[in-house]
Length: 434
Ligand code: ASP
Ligand code: MG
Image 1 (tube, rainbow, N blue to C red):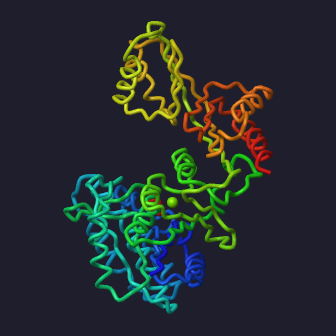
Image 2: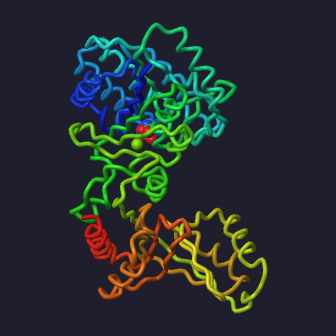
Image 3: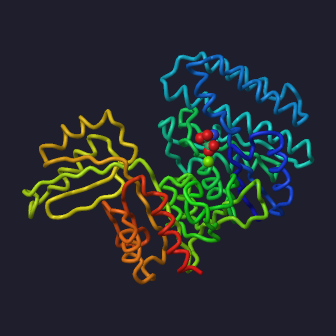
């Protein structure tokens, strides 16, 4: 059976108008079986989190969802049971993360209930799959790790008993082996979609959101970006781990395992071809990922020259400090690494923990720019051109990293130069691709 998974994010299901646009997209689909994974209405996950400390918030949520149901001309009592059980769960005395996972799971459960009822009312016969009954994870409530074979067993049992071919599926939520509700991490509905794609052997997974796929650079920084037709899994992983909000980084793992292509599409511009993430890429494709709020920590110690085990001692300290390192650069007597969003309160702790390894300096107000392309190594002089163009324009480079995989060239410089540097390098690479 030709099966497709289509995931619609929070902004795609935000209100009656957008849900009708989603219906229009799905009703033109000709796969024999469709799994439609939905997020909570945009903002609802945050609002639900707030209800734990601010019970007033619950009325706001109820108001918005009740209006949505009436705009879609559905049964006014449609979500009464869910809202009642949400109120009961809000009064439960549970460990904080367990309670938060349980409370925010209502966002996706309510969303799936509403969308399923609306689709049924339009003649698109379907059934809800509440993944908190079928997707099995560990008990890391807010960032759970899934178990593919257990989840597959449960889903297949359900599907064998169902007479439906089309399903509306809750994104984001799952449960541990004891039946407590867990979540896959913020933005995790993408992972629900790819995991389901793996379990049901989908031909393709589509992720529908509100941009025309992956852009060649962050459109909030420069205006003349192009949208990429095809990128490889590796490139997409580099991009999403870099903070480009195209797809939840972990969500590519199931797709890579089964080599299931992932197509990124725009609900608000369905004619746009989107970006296909698969095992292949286009010859001339590249993208630039950027990150503000980068800090550089440098440790200078001449005793490090020729010493054995120095880096491992340093990285052990970094692990103890729970710092996540982005870029590292090592010379004989210095090690520099970058941290993003380093909070000021941590600085005394870092200085105290690292200073007996050498002289420590911390520079902030930096930005990181990465040029990502599978074909970086084919482009003669990529490295020299990038450096050349920045230095010709008086942009001081603080750090560079160019790994052996040659898929990612990373440059760190002052944050105030970010727009200028992105514009220059983007223009340079665009000239190669045209
Ligand atoms: N609703 C969840 C969130 O806002 C999951 C998702 O949308 O992917 O993070
Ligand atoms: Mg998302």
